[in-house]
Length: 474
Image (cartoon, rainbow, N blue to C red):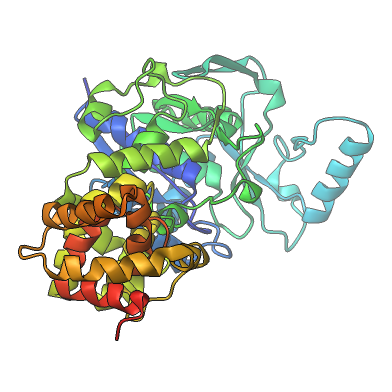
């Protein structure tokens, strides 16, 4: 059995689309499961829309997701000479022909077809015509001499058997009149030369597949196995678009999602594995297969992704989460300021605070937001809810509690909790009533990780100073 080779072939006209990321993931998983290769080809033949920045965004997005490709990324544009070489062969074998129809003629042809209610297809006017009749000064396009009878059949591993009547497929252009190859031709030649055995892509390419199969047939090449996966829709059932929210992988990175969580979520988007939701990367590789991909579009559920991300954060070892967080800080709102302040002391405090922080957060943004109290400068800015807590007798509790906390010999969660509980009992108050003003004074907010963890992480001096600030004690 030949080695399995899959590929991801994005057009560099913008960010790495979340749908494209899922396509890349499916190709990557399939190749990994079968010990094959996962290749990357940048389809940059559209020179007006292709940009270097978009190429870099695609490479960066794939790398961030952990979808590492084998070998160097291939530029389709740089292979244009090879594409022209193949067309020259097809011309020599009579499998392609020169078409001298002018743009004006073709526009007139399409308009007439539109008026007559016919499908807008090339009418074959130069298919059997002698090139000697060519009008002077017109550079020809090169068209495929397609089969006009019979059917083109695709045995698709997701869609099943798909049949196209050849009479519905016209003689497509292989080389434009300027000598540049078309997408249809370039894809076939590149997949063949790269040894691609399986083409896994969106089902919006299904009609393209029929046309490409005709090119394979004309060249006498074996076509790869096809698997066309349904597109991702928004929560309302319409094709995923800007109005549904973020579309690019870079945006999900900036929204604080973990690569592993996004991989897991995208893998389960249209791929069935019973009711099981959570998979390690190794488990995904072991379980993934094409027949388990459904034929219906899947709906992107942001709440589900967020919950999955929170699960991953809680389950992750603190050392690993810390490394991911520090790496992500430059990309997160408020992150660069924290990164700049992250000296050895603050790094130790942040690491110590992670167990409490990650229990309350679903994204890295929420984690950074929750950790804000560690980096706040005295006197703290107090939000409205915390101000209300302090105004409703909270400052009196802080003033009375301060001497008890100052007297704590060994500063830690158990010791500070003991002192606060003793004060609450002496006052006949519930622990929560005392914890609320403490939280407000220490974090400037009404919510935070466990208050005794906060006291421990901040340390004695900073904690007592913040309490004194809000108790009105100089």
